[in-house]
Image (cartoon, rainbow, N blue to C red; front, side, top):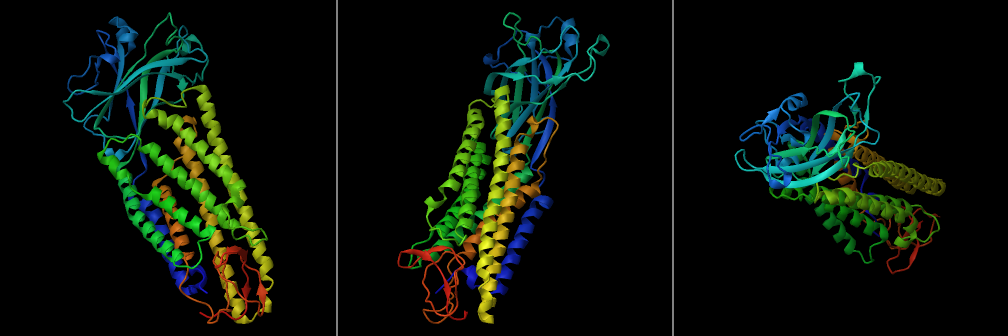
Length: 550
């Protein structure tokens, strides 16, 4: 009968396939390391102090631009404001994004803005414990330097100050600056316009205790972070190339499955489902974000990646479980509910966490779950727990692989009793299977590392002094690894057109799930997992009989 390609293909051809896949893997790392620039760029800005002489509210669509046509009336510092008797409520901090003679681009994909206050120490105006800054902020855009600004968002936000004064608080140290943590400020899921303008007010109301006890703010600094256009183009090109590659191999794989006389078994269905999830994450819908103002693309990308993570982690559990070669009746999804259940629950928690921030940001780009003390603790705890769970998953997967290898070693004790040709054939199959399991384990390790680093990197502005930099080669390399791994599974586990033995009672040597039944002549060892017989009933497949002939 016909087995899978991984069994029946000659060693020479398998080596050629492996070398080609390895070259593509190296190439995927080189694309990010040598061609693509760094994934993101951080641009610092310092707010210009504009004077609102008639005290417009943000709702009156009065925008203050720090430079260019119709620029605002400016002051250098608050000492000048004091001399000119300008009140704090009449000062607007204006930031034009990007700087002079530059334009934003849709290739930047997203825009994340981080806020930091420069606060001077004064004996009579110190930062109180638990001080909260109230910020009246508006965001506007335009697509040429002469048109009017159009409001994009407006909100009144609060940010808790976390500042330390490293020297002694005495009058001689007045004027020195506090060391304040960076604060999350804004995230926009699409950069559809050329110019953006931020107007920030710090309203003061002594009766309501608004912006009282926050120290003497001297300046407001912002850091704008966006994806590099060059990296975006390389990323889109990879997706455009890989999408048809996986789609074609999926169609070819499923066609071979349907040509068999038996229904597909669980492992074959899971491999096909993994291919579908890989195709879903590959489809380059991001091309539309270049021409359309789709602010939900960040959230959609997170959902796609979450589905792929859940499918990949579930597949590895079933992949190892279907090769344990124990007496448990498998080939049913319900057998794995104890392992798959926590994965589904964890993926659902990730979705809820993402919706709590990026879902709300679709309406209010200034919202951040990191803004409140409770939200920060929850977000930090969530990242830590997610990292721990990922490590525990990998350890459990290692244990399953160890069980598989141990069971294979027990079955291998029967090989010396066979003839030399049969023994060499089965030893070759065992080696191929073990090698694929080790590749699976390496892929799982890299995926877990990528997941943890991505979670830390996404929130690295909130971790204080600890920053993790992920370069382009890591992104493109891991993405290429996922595609190559799925491509290899679809190819190697597809039914082969080759047959071993000319008789019906010939050798049935399947390390994978496939149908058939051998006779009980000659040496006999149980080497494979639970499979589905051609005629229906599930049984343990056994290798029997004569020497394998190709």
